[in-house]
Length: 519
Image 1 (cartoon, one colour):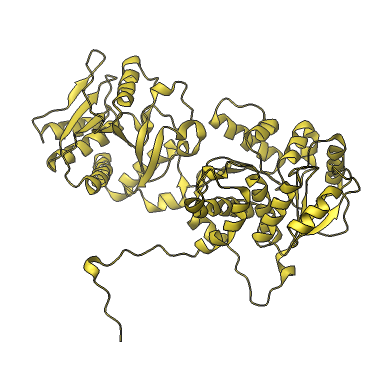
Image 2 (spheres, rainbow, N blue to C red; image 1 turned 180 degrees about the vertical axis):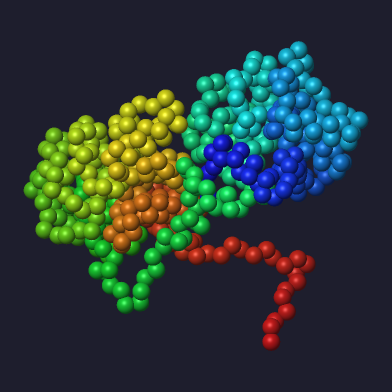
C-alpha cells in the first residue's frame, strides 16, 4: 500500500474532482459520509453524547458533514467551532450553512475567552480541528483545549490525522497534539503512524476509501510504501518438484566469540529454516562443539583462534555471507574483517558488531559490495549516520547514507523501515515480543537465507522482515510478549510461510442456514 505525502493527497483530491466532474464540496461530503458510516455501523443509534470539534478549514468542513449526518439520524450530538483564525475555507463555510439549515442547535463558537464544554468520560469526542492542514503553531487556548480532551478521558476519534500533528516533523510539545484513540485516515495511511515519535498520538488507525481517482493512486510514485501480505506474496518463489538443495544456495554466517556462540547459531538456524539449501557457520574454535551438537544441520568452519575471529579464510564458495552477529569488536577481529572486505565480491548482510566495526572505520564502507544489507538497531544506526534531531531527520540521514554507499539499511523497530536510496518500505508485521535478545540475529539469518535462494537483496530484505514479524504475530497469542524468545521466531517461520496462502475466513451463515449441496 502506498503512503502518499500531504502534497500528493491534495493533488489527488483536485484531480479526482476534475476527472469525476464533481466539486471539492462533493468530495468533502463523500469523505464525511464515510466517517459517519463508520460511526453509525458501530453505534447503531446509541445515545452516547458525541462532541464534534471542527476547525475552520477543510478538516473542520469534514467534521461539519459528520455532525450533520449524526443530527439527521437522531444521535445526541453537539457541534463546536474552534475559532482559531479569521480565515475560513470555502467548503467549511458551505457546510457551516448546511448544518445551520439542518438543526436549530447551531454549532457553538469557541474562542480564547470561551469556557470549554463539560465532557464526561463516557462521551465521544470527534476531532476535526486541523487534520493534515496544520500550518501554524498551536496557540495557547487551543493547546489548553487539547489538554481538556485528555483530562476528560473520553474516547477521541480523529479525522484524517490527530490535530496538531504535522505530516513532516515531530511535535516539539506533546501537549500541542490531540491524543486519539482512533484515527480514520482518508485513502492512505500517513507516515507518522509508523514513526516512534509520532505514532504514539493515535492508538489505532484505519484507512477509509473516499473514491480518489484509481489511476492516480496506481501510477503516482510515493516516497514510502507499507509492506503487507499483498506486497510480499508476489515475491515468493515456489519450488519445483525435481529441485535439490543445490538449487537453493549456500549461506555462510561469520560470527560468534567466546560467550556469544548463540548469536551465530540463531542466525544460521534462521538461514536454513527460511529455505537456504546449505548453511555453513564460521566461528572461533570455541563455537565448534556448541554448533555441531546444538544445530547439526549446519556445517562448521573454525578460525585458528579459540575465542575470537582473527583470520577469515575458507575454501567454499557461498552465494551470500552474513557477518557480525556476536563477533565482537576486538582489534584482531576488526583487522580480519577489513582484510576480508578488500577481496570479497559475494553479497553481504552485516549486523551487530559488523556494523560497529564499520562505524569505527568509516573507510571500510567504500569496500562494501553494491546492495549490501545493513540491519542496525537505533544505537548502531547512530554510529553509521550520526545523531538525528527527530525521526524525520533520521530517515533523511539514512536515505543519504544509502545513496552514498549504495546499500540497503534496515532500521529495526516496532515498524521496521527498510531504506533503499530515496525509498522507504514500512513493515506491517511484528509486535513487542520481538524486543528480546537474539531476534535480530534470527532476522540476519532469514535475510541471508533468502538471498541464498536467489531473491535479489531488496526483495529478500522486505520479504525477510515481513516473515520475521509475521512469525511473531502468529505465535504471540499462545506465548505472550514476555515469554517470547528468539528461538520462537524460527519455530514460527513455517506458519508465516503458510499464512501467505491462507484465505480469509468466511462469515458463518445466518440462522444456522447452510448452502444446499450441488448436484
